[in-house]
Length: 331
Image (cartoon, rainbow, N blue to C red; front, side):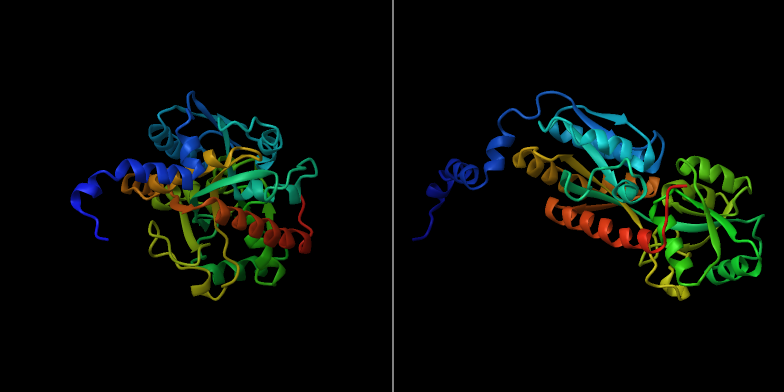
């Protein structure tokens, strides 16, 4: 039977009831949550890439939820300190944590990290991708123009060429060690407690090479103090369009990008997870957030909870094999 206009106008209330019955999460999201500020744990220091992206996201999410999102920085051991504490956080929808690549890999490096990133938490959403870039100090390595010349120079000396990264267990560190295990290069990792001190010593010539996240490296590359020789992504990066990928230079299969997402305590109600995931999808689709993310060097990259879970497991397992095969340990 055709639906007349008069009958159609009477259906919205019935449709709403039907939606509430079909999707319990909609019922729960209307049950008063959130009615107070929400805490977002960031397992790295203020000012770093995780913190910068988290604050942009938190501001946008807070506006949509009608509550303040309070960022709580808890750095230490590549995020393992914060994650270890977060395991026992209240599962009431008022505490979330940023889960990033170094923290996913922390249990492979730190014996004190007893959590499993793929099973100890409830994934909510992926938020962003963080491209990495290999860059050199122009004064320290004036003849290096690409990966081949960098790797050739690393093998030309009896001593390994020093390089640094965002930290032990970072995707840049593991990517370089993977290439080292294949015989492409002879380089020795120098670990720092975060991107900022690693970048300071690269700029100062203490360490001539850095495999850094784009947030840390982009200003120095744009300012001419560092020369970018390769991006660690499968495709070129919009903010560095002239810098070739590894695959373009003959080193495909060794790419490494970091990413960041949101997790909740294990028993957080599914209705709240669904609500935050949907709000995040809409946030990350907005031009404003995409532009703000690009300005700091990250790329909006939404994934729902189930796909975020799969990505967590894949990274934890795949990069864990690289750690074991190369007998990597905290430095």
